[in-house]
Length: 174
Image (cartoon, rainbow, N blue to C red; front, side):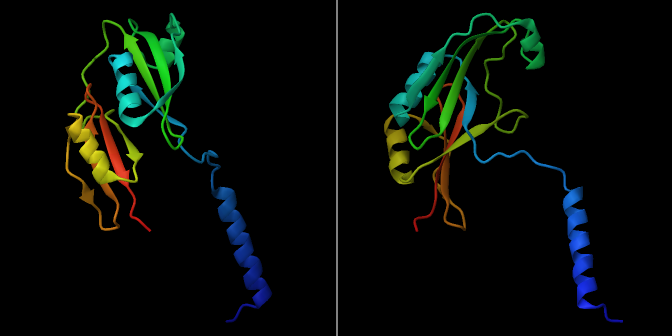
């Protein structure tokens, strides 16, 4: 049995509208503004990123005492105090926010790379081989030699002096 064209069109529009109505709204986000990283020594971490990557300090704050309500809301240890946080601007626009906390309950050990809560940041470079040579020349711990994916993307990981992992990624040249 053939359905007239107008009826088929009406049915497809109704089904499409019903499917759209059933789709829940999503957040309107477009890009990452910054990545936050807890560090044991904020002066040393700031020097690491400014000396190694040319990052610029765009804010440096010492917030003072943190209210207990905030500690509960953000799942911080009761003994914790946020000593200082620094926002760095990397070349190309990405930002990195460094936090230094103090407190008797704080674990100062980095999680293993496969532990829940472990993370890394990935930064883009146009010169992965030059970046690798520069890092090696500065005695930075390299976790792997560059790997080339089937799509031509090249990447490797290195470690900050306090044990955080950073990935450098190079897209294939056009």
